[in-house]
Image (cartoon, rainbow, N blue to C red; front, top):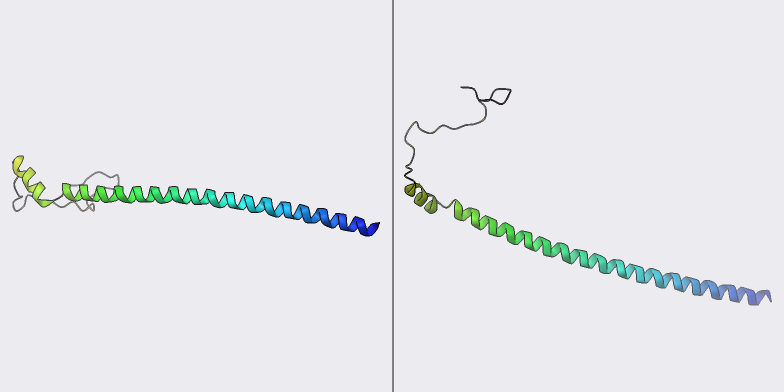
Length: 102
């Protein structure tokens, strides 16, 4: 009789083991799919941001183009600076409290 009990116990342990392995396989597959969806979402966001950066660079280059700036300057009556009219501010002339000296 004890031999029969051993077989029954082994049978139930093998069923329980198969059940645990099956459930863990399903859980891992669900986690893998969740990660795949998250990765897809992040890839789309990266593509959108890359496209936005490209558009912004194009807009920036358009705004600072010399031809456009020259046209706007002539429209507003601006002329190139003469000798002695330009001052470069390097930031070294600041007082410790942040105010300008000179």
